[in-house]
Image 1: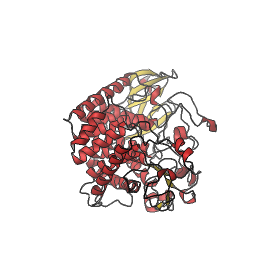
Image 2: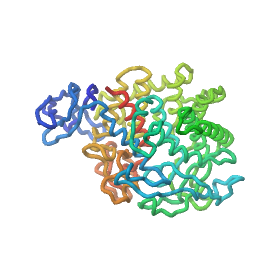
Image 3: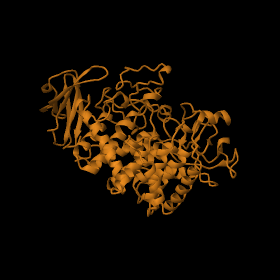
Image 4: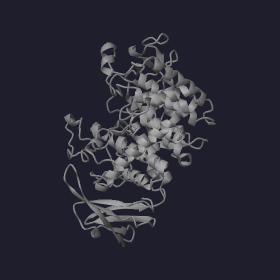
Length: 543
């Protein structure tokens, strides 16, 4: 916890706040009693919880908060989120494909090269005049997408987009954040180096004959829970899609702008700009090329059953792409298109809902433009609506107060991305209520929640230990790879047919820390990217 932040704890039951005591961790001397804010009632289970405040504690040090037999350790210090912020960035290194993960960077999680991806086949769904079915291409590098071993353009683009957004607003912080990866020590921020490892792969996913972008690089079926070096299925690039092409165009344009003049990657910006324009024009010419995997698999063999990342509307992807291409080229054609496609309300950014990434770029880079003004009004209205729920929240958070807030990937897609939205509102208004709310969202993820878990592997007194993650499950190491964000409570329990013993059906308690629970305990790069964006911005801002 930061010295000057609001400090809140939540105790099960209706209790006297004076009995919730803060002690010095070393001497066990009582430092203070807490002040009761209110008694909260869960809207789902009806459980009573006492919300207490100890914000008066501002002296740096190590403490425990104590009630009856429960003693929870915590620290008050500057840069309180620095280590977990570093861990969230470093997690992407462990997800690298096509290179050995070396002990000097990964310690006990080192592993040999897996999935070189230098012999990838063109799937029959992805043919073009220059690349008939079965053509072998090289498509190395990039990140494993989630708990599986495939690589997906749509999710990669979102992941890079939201991290570059946070980087652009907090350059000094991320430029100084070192995480011990092979590129550490060059003239580029480690975050940008790690992102470049995936951008290099993405560039190989563009068909050089027409500019379209393959939807994903995948095996026909998910691999078992084995290490990458033990995987032997043929890998393919499959159908070019309009959503992948617009997403690719957006993130390449954004990266071309932000890496311009970079001495470690001197030719990248021009290459990325050309690639972005080619992908955008292909998407314009192929508006119906949406990705419907089941239909594709009925028509082409081998059938593909891996992650879909399908979409039925490319309007938000085109808005984001037109926005980034306008900021890169200043061609008014893109601004006109963006104005025609601008959203009518703000929604939290997700891989399938990308209009808000475009909104962030307008707000931050062209604040006087009419599109930016509209987007800002929508953002503030949204943030005000969620902040207003904190007064009756079970855990003093802006998000997580509706059953709709819980589901697949909710910790990232609600709490993290919601927190980033709140930070943009704070940046635009200077109103500290938004910063406070974003911080409370982070604390929910880190342990102040209905399960008591810190949902980031390797951190906290009760961390997630068994994520649905092949690398962590198959390596024979007890501790999971650190810095990974679990998906979180999911009352849909789509994996319950696997006989997973969920402790509860309540929306905020429906979480199982077992490797088999892909519905509540998988990890994914888009979720970790949202975590990086939130924690880095908070650590750069909090005092």
